[in-house]
Structure formats: structure tokens, C-alpha cells
Image 1 (cartoon, helix red, strand yellow):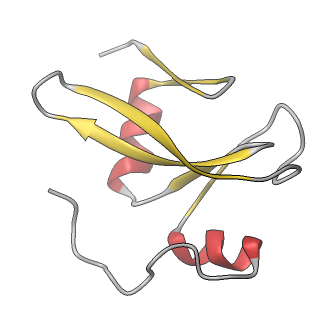
Image 2 (cartoon, rainbow, N blue to C red; image 1 turned 90 degrees about the vertical axis):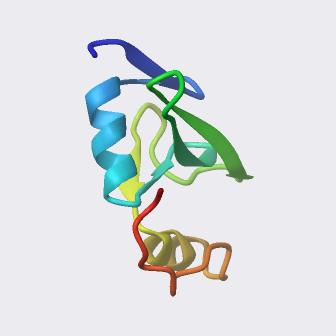
Length: 88
């Protein structure tokens, strides 16, 4: 599947988003943090904004991070880090 996924103002390839999803990563952009999801019925990956704050990364860039890395960046526990079970 060669479609693109739009996350905020960021455009990523569907395969790249699936890789981050399988690695249990969150997408950090300049102004928000997104959690990745996958719909088996539609065979599409998508993202939902879970936190908003300014200057998380340089404008125009993004970072894929684990829950522990997100918590470290924010300096408080936004996400659970003890759940290492694979996603359904």
C-alpha cells in the first residue's frame, strides 16, 4: 500500500507509519504528540492527537519515540510504560 498518511501537517508513507506502529512508537511534531492506530477493516493506519504543546521538535521535523521517551521529553508521566504486550 503506497498511500500517504497525514499526521497534523506531516505527511508520512503508509509503510513508515506501519513500522512505527509495530514498534509501539508515538509521533512527536513541533506542536503535538500523536498515537498511531491501525484499522484492520479498512487496512489503514491513522493517528490521533493525544497531547498538545509548543516547541516539542524543530518546526518541520518529527520524531518517533517510545512511551518512556515521550515521558522523559515532557518531564511527567503522560503514557504508561509498563505495558510491553503486543498490540492486537
